[in-house]
Amino acid sequence: MGATQRVFAGLDAEWAMVCADPANGSLVYAWVEECGVAWAGALPQDLRGLVAGLAARRDAAFSDRWLSTLLERAAGEGREAQLAARVIVQTMVPGMVRLTQSLLTPCRDFDDVAQVVVGCLYVVARTFPLHRRTKVAANLVLETLHHATRELGADEAREVRLDALGDMPSAAADDVADRVALALLIERGHAQQVATAADVEGAAGELVALLAWGVDHGSLPIQQARSVVSVVREEAERAGAASPAARKRRSRAVSWLRPVADEWVAAA
Image 1: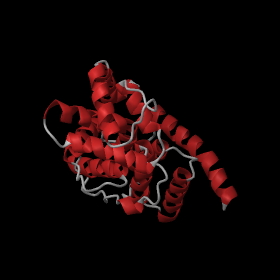
Image 2: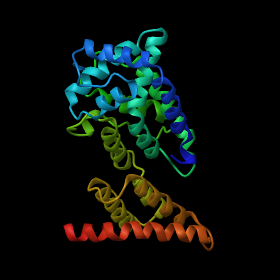
Image 3: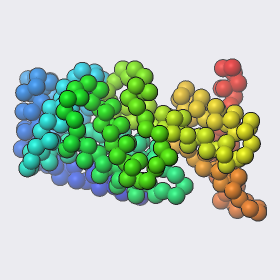
Image 4: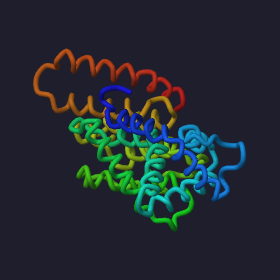
């Protein structure tokens, strides 16, 4: 994990310390066993292995059950509530990295956004509405998103709704966050800002469609799509000749878009 992701590197280091205490693994194992998720010999009792095993199971009903159990514990007080919330946060880390990336703008530093996102996730984990017993991972991502956009002052952001994400075969946090990031690109209008900045409706409209198509079909990573948006806006706002660094960013954006455009034309 690079220097621009210090918040998540810090979480990983803290998680190693939490997992070093075998009592934590035994306690969490007992919680999930009580709700019928863990069975003899099926999951390890060490905390790191247990959480990894729970998160790896691609079964929405399974995930809903054990996440709901931890959320019930996290709503309480004291050390056990803190441990339950910490397990939820660690489970959601892959999704929170993607959510952080989806909230970046040219004016926002990765770690500044990550700090807000992680802080909001803790709040959501401790205050989650326990009557929501289905699509729990999705609701955790969306509640964190809605808190974070308010914290970041993103008043222009349209809220992403659960029903806007369509059917999700897996409750994995990173899968849900990928769907949220795509919805942000399209629904919140980040791509649409290209049209405003470029002031060329037809060409910009085609670029928006290309970006959305590329992300939706897995041809263009979301972070690359966001970088293209930033490059286009930068080019539109520049007065004078481009710097060598700007020309390099422009060239890189073109290299990303060329194969996507070829696939788009072939699929038309």
